[in-house]
Length: 293
Image 1 (cartoon, rainbow, N blue to C red):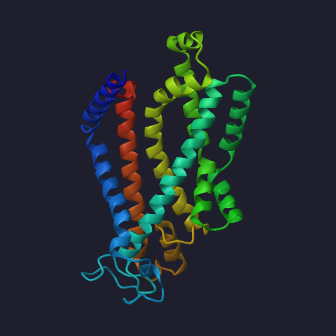
Image 2: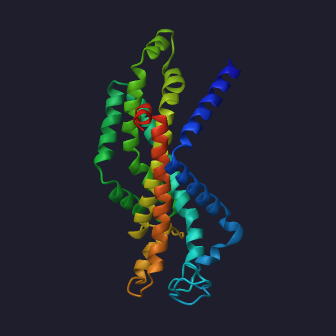
């Protein structure tokens, strides 16, 4: 039985990859993400944290892009290229971990609300609706200000405020799965709550959750950049803190367009890559979208 299940998983993965690789936009987004993640992981091997030090900036202030400094320098003579490279570690780390926290909370609440349809499910959905009507950006800003500036608090602030949409999505899918006949047969044979949710519900919501995760990471990166620009940063160099610094030091009035454009383009390219991968996953994993495509 184990070998049969393993063979089925391998066949399903091979079919998934065969369909996914035909989506050019999704493949392009995946290549961009792989390059971005590899560069972020390799950053400590080539550069150090001293590239963000205002004391050790050795370049000319507000130097435009050139052969020596392809992305120019900032108000302290620091290389924008090296700062964007180093800042990718913080932006991607916060994006991934905040999205993971949001997905985990949304998954637990969504499955519980869809499986337990009595007072517990109703109470969970009322809590979800309460969080849903709160302005997530303002709430995250307040939480970050209360908890203090650190990577952990920014991750918590983003994750706690962005899970309700995932919970509603997972609850709807859970209700659809548990309305199928084989769930009734499983319960009639004595299956408990844990067996139904882990053996039947979770495998069926996992594909939807995978597609949702990529979109959540993109949203978390944008939220982190917005919070950093508004002043609630993790006290580490990120693409958002670079945009904030360009505003604080008047890059626009100095004519240093590169200080604004380069971090903004980094956010745009990575978020677009996550979006392309997420849309491609939705098309492959959703039978209705696959037929229409």
